[in-house]
Amino acid sequence: MAVATATKPAQGTPDSKHNIEAMRQAFYDRIAKKDMAPLWKVMKSVVTKEPVTRVAPHVWHFDDVKSLVMESGGLITAEEAERRVLILENPAMHGESKATNTLFAGVQMIMPGEVAPAHRHASSAIRFVLDGKGAYTSVDGEKSFMSPGDFVITANWAPHDHGNTSDVPMLWLDVLDFPAVNFYEASFAEHFDAPTQSTTREDGDSLSFYGSGVLPDGSWTKNYTPVINYTYERTRPIVERMLKAGDVDKRHGARVHYANPVTGGPVLPTMGAWLAMFPKGFSGEPYRSTDGTIFVCVEGQGTTTVGDKELHWGPNDVFVVPPWKHYAHKAAEQSVLFSISDRPAQKALGIWREGK
Ligand code: GTQ
Image (cartoon, rainbow, N blue to C red):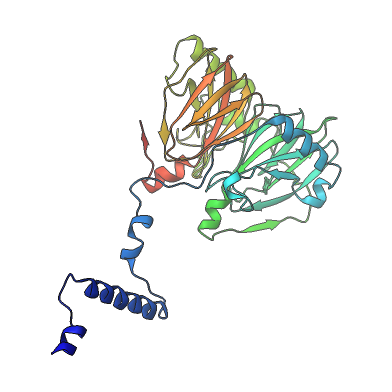
């Protein structure tokens, strides 16, 4: 009888606990060999109660960025590099080419006389112009000359090349959704034989056709905006008028979103963008949402508090706010912030949330 009791201990004794743990572990080891695992061991970490993020709040100051990007101009040509870009790596995710978990950010430079050759890819790209004047990007048959504050769209699979016929280097922020595309393992890319595409439309055509309150007869049915370049010359006066009219959100300032003029929806299915002006002395209420956001200071100076971290920003600084972290903007001077996130993708999936 003593032997039987030892092999079949009563429930709840230390012996039975040890025994069941050992049995479970032996079971886990056996099922692992068949490429299976127990959900109950990982349930809380895979179905989390709240968003868990690896993204660190961070600011890249333009003084550093510009001098290092300029230095890279002495090391490699745009042609050799294909794109001469310094990646803004989230400090918590070095080596992954990510600013947030879904978005890449980098600063591209194109020197006078250079060409960044024509290619296309599944990832969508946006450019936000930081410095220089008169370089161009050609997108799907339209050549667009760019100035600081311009917001330029290169939708997925649209052929694009860049060139600089001015006499000063141009720097812009690139944001691409390839971390998200690569998550789906759905990336394609191809190069064209000719380094520059021949353009069939004039500079500004898409903005004047689609961005003037009238729409051409015939329909644009693509799921992204037909406008190539939302120029700062046109967007800045709008947020300035909103500010003067007192249309200032307590968290987001006097803000517009860049819209597809045909649908009123976001410019791209994967990325959305905003432009906001803040009055001097603005001290915003805290906000959070599930889309990690990349900001660029276009004008002015201020501080964004993210949790217990303070990010100080001035012109052309780029900073990142992680998903679901409270943040609040303070503007020491009248300021303008551009921002971009994966909100349209999250909304399409039905998972986007904002909260207090
Ligand atoms: O300009 O096409 O920063 O393809 C990364 C990949 C820019 C571009 C980037 C790209 C580009």
